[in-house]
Length: 319
Image (cartoon, rainbow, N blue to C red; front, top):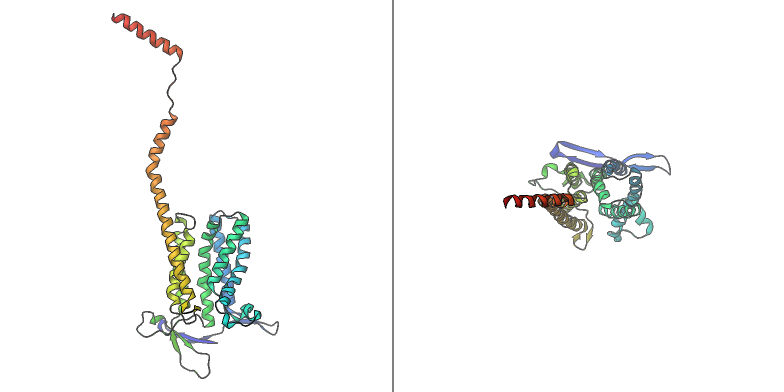
């Protein structure tokens, strides 16, 4: 059981069980809230993606194939990323693949998922950039819900939050699962921060989707938005994965923000310049086109003879 509270929000002490229910097979198979929430996130993400994919002209059967491969390899990537950044915790292959004991990293899922989408789209001759645009907001849905799986596990929280901090009203009280402890400590609920950050980003990106200026704009907005938020929120967490003294997720978040933001600005400027160029040159082009299509009138030999005769007669009359 996880005992917690949110006194700043008027929520007193309560307890939650990470296990939703137990299936009476294999000596009792536990089904955890984390797994159920992740599954719900995948289903809702797929439904949203199917809606956007249709707008991008992607056939549903192709989307289904992409989704099947992407979900499988995204989970493998999430586990592989976590294991490779925490090798000191694993001493055998069995421990490394025991995903039911916990240990997934969202960046691993995103990287593996993106690679899978790229490969499948190339094989099926689907526009990769359009597919990524449809997928990006869907991934945010999974992230919004997935962080609430951390809530039920009593994990992914930050450092102790001191009174006077601007986020003190959101403090999360946690009672350590140790019998000798009876004091509740108050931490930054970083799982909540990230869930809300992704929700705001999803609403903004979803509102701008139909107004995108170029293919790839949506996925770049996602990378930039998520990278910036994760870069800041990761600095508050106490369970970060490290390489030396550096928090891996914070570095990756920073790189996503810088690279994604730069590419987004550059491509928006290019799209804007293209619109202005088109507006400037269209009148000139249309004028030249009219001049080229206007052919000089052909004068027949009879008309030439008549004209010459008229000119001769006119000359004689003057004389």
